[in-house]
Image (cartoon, rainbow, N blue to C red):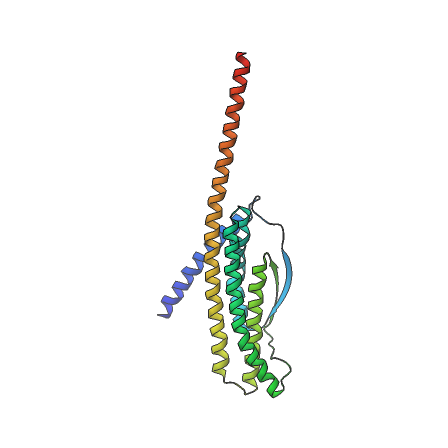
Length: 227
């Protein structure tokens, strides 16, 4: 069963990578690409946050850009606004619910007089590029999970909660973030397909107009020659 699950995950990841590469390539085309991005350095400590970042962030931000900006560039404003609302609300809801666990952890910190969270020598500093506000929101969600996980580890080491609680809560949030990422990925794919069709349609219309213009020019030239 474990081998079957690993094989399924591998095939799924390959499919997602292939989909993402198509979108990524589309976003680099001259008439589509955006020259704007913001660089920042993010520090992550927990294994859960690092895993989510490694497996989702680049893919998801690419899909977010497709869902919210690519659609707008091709005049699909209604779809763009709808996607912005869906992505924003899903991240906002998840962040709000995760914040309840953070508040409980902070309450325990205050009760026992803890001032600082645990640290790890395995922390990483990541240089990332933000290309849309939804990408920033998703990055903040990962950082929020990182903060919560390290606080739960601290409370476990302080003897305030069992190890199982610390691990179960972190894992539960990790699963929920992955599910949210999958939903966003689907929006990005739908947006890419819609934008690609709109691009083809616009190109055909442009060619049709050029052909009609040339035909009119030729007709005018022939009439002038007859006169």
